[in-house]
Amino acid sequence: MMIALKAATPQLPRTTAVADHVVAVDETDSTNALAAQMIGDGSLTLPDHQDGELAVAVVAADRQTAGRGRNGHKWVSQPGRCSTMSYAVRIPRAIATDESVNGWLQMIAGLVTLDALNGMIEEYGAAPNQPDCSLELKWPNDVFCHGLKLGGLLSELVIPPSSGTGTDADADDDVVIVFGVGLNLALGACRLPTPQSTSLQLHVSGLPSFGEMRDAVAERQVEGFRERLAKFIADPKGQAESLREEVKAVCWARGRQVEAHFTDGTTLTGEAIGLNEDASLILRTQDGTDHTVRTADVGVL
View 1 (cartoon, helix red, strand yellow):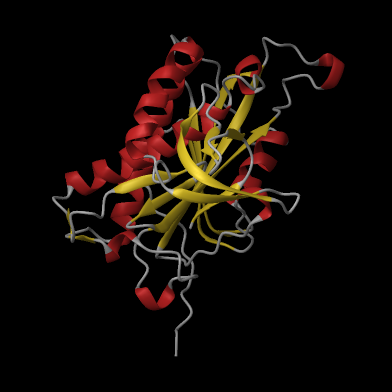
View 2: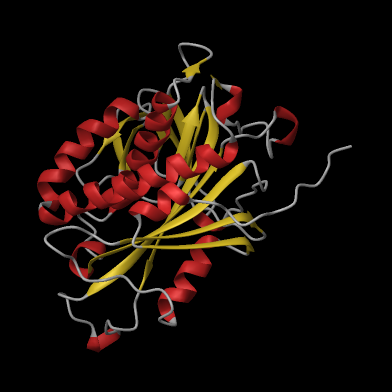
């Protein structure tokens, strides 16, 4: 019989030391939803950019009762085993709404997450159990290990009270992007939510306790979002090309035969050959035609 785990308020001393704000609760419906609510009612504010350095706020919970993934999917997590965090960052509205570059915001979140996980593993002297257990990104929003889903990302735009909406909106206004990051860090095999999911501890030996892992990863994510997004804001087009090359090295789908499932129920099958300049996926069908995929769930065949 599986014993239900009790939620406890996350203890995040390292994250608190580097973040501008940290809100930690034992349980909430969704950390993204809680962050959006607090930004909307003014109880969570982010200061203006200072000398190019971005403010980053963190909302953390040990248990989510209605965790959300992309395209309406649910994110199932276990307290004391899975990290559920949201990172809120102010960025210019002009960048957040520019479809030629805003797709890279999700890719940045993925790279920040890989950096944080790999950095934590290195800090504690841990090591993969097998040589093919490197961490990768499955376009557009999953963290993969050994071909299985270890984590998921969800980015959402929130309009703070100080910004206008509709005809009152100003291109120079800032908006807030909330990056939700769910990671299976210490789940045992018997607690995995699906056969397609996995957990870090199943692939890496020598890891610290779950609480230490969660805090060490979150600390690095705060610093990663701050650094990478500041560079992106300063030069979106230039950074897009650099990010394209960086993602290529960790793109799990690249070179594989995959099937894209669209929200209207249609599918498209082909080889994932890379990313376009706007971060959309290039899918080459059997007839040699390249298709651009911007919004879809992508699975390997």
